[in-house]
Image (cartoon, rainbow, N blue to C red; front, side):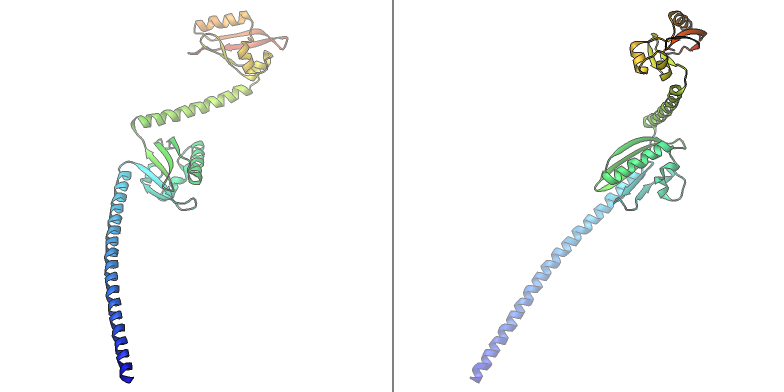
Length: 272
């Protein structure tokens, strides 16, 4: 029994040793395979990193190849990344001054840019604007959401686009002036009206509508209600035909009462 017990222990030891050897060999093989796969994965990741860095450098080179500024927000509350030549629009050392729109734009344009940038960051709403800086530089502003980021690009424009931006700025300034004059004309108590080249009434202020007892200016123009009598209109027409300013004291019926007006009729290229 003792010998049998010893033989059984030897056999168990040999079996354990063989099993342990097989396990070690199997573990070594699996380790080598895992290491080979890891090395291949590392090599692939390194290749991807190198490719991404090359692509980043290429994109940065393209971005810096023309005068522009790119602002990127990763999250709605995160600090922006600002890339490019910030001296295009500001002489401040801090790049963040680019986002102080009121420091380089007219107040109305600065407010429009702030609203557009907020909508871009909050809701991804794209926008495009042609701007003119306070220093007279034409800037094309474009905002859009790309890959979960809000991206604002401010690009210096030249040639046709610059002319278009300058024309747009002049147009907006002209429209602002016209709106100011229209507001002034609407508030004066004296009747004011405009005729086209054919003598048709195309504008009248509220004082004119009140004088001819129309509901409003649109009603007066729609019905072609005249303030001056025929003689006064003919005299004014003759002066316009001669390219002269008509100035006369002329009678008119206002709200059923005969009144005397100092009338001034000034000819223009498109009417009077």
